[in-house]
Image (cartoon, rainbow, N blue to C red):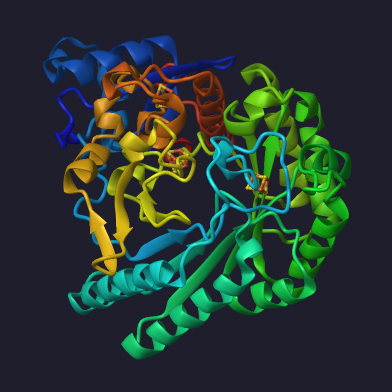
Length: 475
Ligand code: SF4
Ligand code: SF4
Ligand code: SF4
């Protein structure tokens, strides 16, 4: 299915949200917002659907329309579009599916070969090298053509712990640095790791990686229980050492905390703990556990959307006081996009077996979802990658233009239909019905809007009978 790249139909998209203070007019494509009263909402919607209604309005009603129109509420804006044409300048490499932890909710059965009996595998160096060649060449050509590309990006991730293949990681980084020097294109290296590293690995990480994401379950007891070492012992002490060294070295790093029902009430406490112990982290990312992979075989359950939202908002108060940036993936009112992640542009992710997948969570050919997300592989005979253009075209259709369930959602251009692996688990695009996560995304996005409105002094517009249409209430 192609991505439908249509312009917005008239009328422009205008939503009426409500909270305890009353209605909020919200135009998502321009991110304009204003508190209003019911009569202002009525005239705004009437004018948006048919501008000729202006003639029949009273002077006060017309003034409301003019105030909103001056601020751009009725302008048609182009829909966002994701990149088409597969010329990646970024690659995510999964060096190994081996792992030194056995997290109870691991989506990939890390250290156990995906749960379907696949062997533990380390990526051949040649596969990593050809991946880097491809993105570096693209970056060079696109820079020479005047595109705003500044580097190529190698991200190290995994359906296991990447540093379990430390020797390979060193060779990947050295090779990337050589290519960067030869082509005169800067190379950037990012890593996602569980943080249980040797001292030598830690030194290498600090010296060579620009940004690091660490998975940490927020408090020592949760970390030890949910993310034990393969031996069954707790992992917190090792991880704590890593994070303290990253702080000390001034490395740009973020923490990702997977929230289960059992720990949801501790979210504010987790923010305090992180702020106390790892000051200056780039962000703290809370994500409710998704029941897939090893999680299905454990007792971990997803918190209810109400519990997650309530505790996230309480945690946000702490975060603002402590100077921590808090994130949940579905609430991002500052973004205007048509896809949740890069999956629809064919995110170039290479598994240890040399398969190319568009989705981090789908990394085994035995996973039924690989039919949708796998779109290429490293061909040993050719010594390079081969890609399936038909698959790439299908992936391009994984965008919110085609998720009609989202058509009337005010988060449509922010959440963009959420994570395709979660909401389309084995179903056709047409059957996208959102998920339990929608409640969280909507509540937290509304909260982002409220915060922006409430940061501004409410200016009473006499003509609008209480409608706050002052520019300071508009974004
Ligand atoms: S560290 Fe990552 S790959 Fe390893 S078991 Fe935990 S979640 Fe899975
Ligand atoms: S589809 Fe979901 S799981 Fe897959 S890469 Fe995108 S956000 Fe991650
Ligand atoms: S309906 Fe759900 S998945 Fe779709 S945009 Fe809204 S919150 Fe996201």
